[in-house]
Length: 361
Image 1: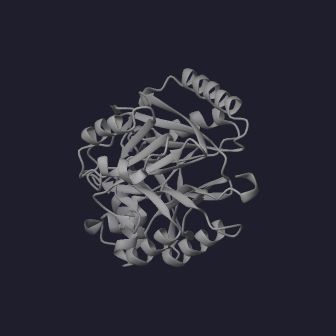
Image 2 (image 1 turned 90 degrees about the vertical axis):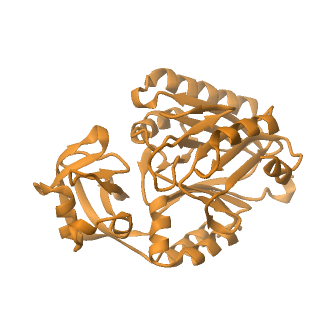
Image 3 (image 1 turned 180 degrees about the vertical axis):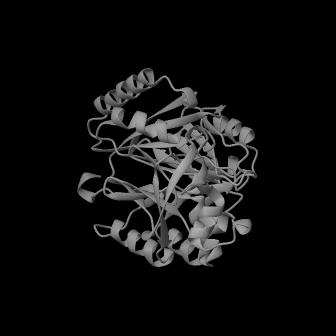
């Protein structure tokens, strides 16, 4: 942490975000951060991998500082999200949002950033609950990870470490900020229906009235005994919400031959198999779109672990890392992403920051 503090310099920060490798001692990092940034909101989460200066990486502690000269922030720890008492949380968010706006009338731009326990099974409900309280503040975020172990995911705010919790940071900025979400998946004609599920545990027991894993394997043309994270990354399933398809990513097959999902699932849901577009070409195109009115000064990205797995499987990690690096993307690999009121998978959600015009410096 001393090295991170040195690299961030003597700038006064409104907030510092830490994306911490599961290889690091999270408790130690959080405690050290409190010592290094005593008068600053410090939010932190564990990761499923990091995005650093050279793109995809592992074993890092990635720090993002928001200088007081350009940002005003308020971070809230939301605990007990599995049995959330929604109204007090909504009221608190609304009050803090209004106060932040009233206290910083010269900061025209704003957004909200959410990090949440990636094993809480509650991201869907949480995102849908808090989004209305934010009104016109766009929200993005990511679910804390634990490599590929799925054992323990943690978030922290100002030294307090929590599971079954989330940290919501409201931000106002002098700099133009654009929240985005991207994915490279194209729906096919292959569909399946969830005929038995345990929604509370995000488990699908049967598809098309057949055992779930076996039927999924048949539809995607794989051996049911050989299903693994590479299969799920290369043969994702999506659900149509409104006019848009969103991924409902599969985490693993359990011992009963059921499919465990990363996000909300229910009986009667129609799932469509998607095929991936070329990740490298797609990411480059999307980054160029974010740059059409000027290249972003920095981008924070919450990138699904399944994108990283697919990149490794297709040997595209180096090219993707080069693109992430060239567009100054930093962030972490997640167990899911938040965008607006939705918790999604197999996407990158994030925010791009743009240089302030010289006339307004």
